[in-house]
Image (cartoon, rainbow, N blue to C red; front, side, top):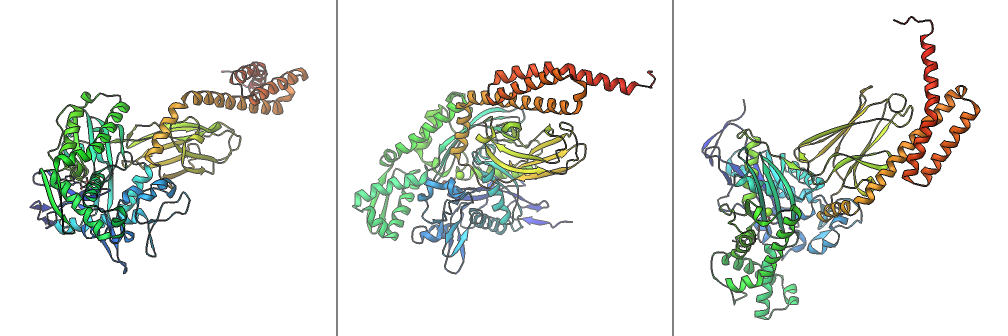
Length: 619
Ligand code: ADP
Ligand code: MG
């Protein structure tokens, strides 16, 4: 029998292990559970009353690690040892980070390769996975302290546009923190769930999730139908958020007080004060008309009106992104059934007002916008714990997944936007007689030729027993689990030889790359169709040539010299057509060669049949 604990938060006997929901944010992270008594999701708060843990990790000279508010206080004074925004680096190589590297005040190692980035603090090196695991460990510790039970299972959220590598990195961070990550779910999906959207049967809705956090803005359009969430489009700006509002206030006060950029740069504690006061002013103005404070004994003030004027351009940029997202989804603002507000910065009245105006309707803002993602993760955790058996949540794949077939063609097994978890399979065979191994190359992307897509993994199915070409039956199966992690397996049916691989990509794609891959597939669609047709014709012709050549060497005796010459002539013509890369000519010549050789093949078959019948009774 397992341990029984009394849960002091929920006031009930805790028989089952609690599964927590975690929002691992760029700026803030937090942890939530569903109360067993009221079935309401709640954010876990320490005695300080705060649920949010700033996603900031500080290392001192002695190797001690602090996470959250104490680390945030050292952000400017000890910039090289205080790591923020690590979520931006998850699952990325230095190449992926590239031009954005200037954003980070700490040291990102550039080894110029595809390898995942490392961050240097003093003489130590950390991966983003390790750094995130420190944040998760802190959250776990908090939850255990508050709930007085040990926590080992979690649901963690990620942005909808996160690719496989970024999701895998998040999952690894969880494991490193001692958490069994039962599922990774999309942030907009979680936010919808927190409001109970998608928890009822036969519910069909189109939802916009507007998420303005500390440093990032995401707008996602989702449809939900019978508990299945599908992302129609995502848009946003990875460098737009509450921090930018703070920055415009800092600039405004700098001008008023006559403080130059150089002074701020040289006097870190002054810069820190400006930053802290600016954020205070912004937060204060969400509920008040005027802010008054002190920076270095000098009075500063800001009215709501002036603040609105300063941030209007920032808010306008989010509205443009909303319009783009609607366009991508092929929808009009009025077709959206619900608009969910997420992220601390949506507390700003001007933001709410502009979003309401744009969508022409009231928004969902009853829940704390900075808690709503974690609350939704807790709802999902509750479903996984079996407390809400009515529904199963599903997400979709961002890009198509397939394998390379003859001639470098992409054979899609799981199309883009397929629901996950998902399973798909197809049968393949060998090209050559006695072929004993088969290379399975897995690709992601929308183009017809694999060379234009992204290779995820490759393995060899070896030990196929010698058989004539076309006889082996190799079943290739793609299985995407609920976290979007792909498992590829191949089995040769006749012999039972099998091989499989978990696809954990070396490094991730940036959002831009995913977008470019989609755009590319549209611009090149016509070319791709042409290329595919040529490759297919060539493959078929090559097979025809191989078979005919084999036939000639085996059954030369059945043919007259003229017949052999005629066959060779058409084989040459077909080879020329292949070299000329002329699809129609290849088709024609293949047909002709087929017509020429068919009677010979029939002759051989008849002879074989007669042979077999000789001396046997026909029943
Ligand atoms: P993230 O998703 O990026 O981790 P959050 O959703 O926690 O971030 O949002 C953090 C941002 O919200 C910060 O810029 C913070 O200053 C801002 N914020 C928090 N509360 C308020 C408020 N009452 N008014 C305006 N901005 C706020
Ligand atoms: Mg967030």
